[in-house]
Length: 95
Image (cartoon, rainbow, N blue to C red; front, side):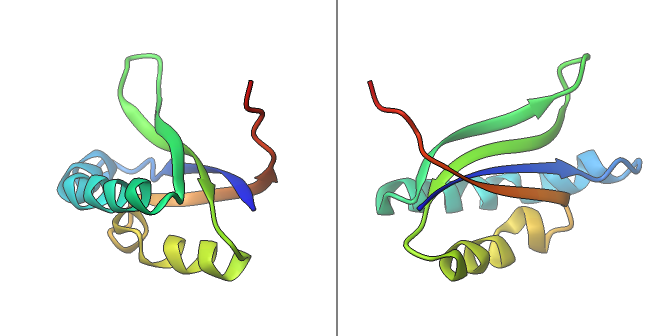
């Protein structure tokens, strides 16, 4: 099933530093997901000043349990970056 994941970072003064600290590990995870076919597309959510304040991702997993396992272990979760995560099932249109 395909999912839209919208995840917002914390808003405290240390939030940008936490993101930068684990960003490379998160991107390595995304590269592995891309190779496995579970990451479809996504990117950072920006504020008016162009700063990263969250992420939006389209992902595909066989089960909701697999989705939850990925989320539980993503560096942005384990590193305390994403603090507000919303997941919705979607069907991506391919034209």
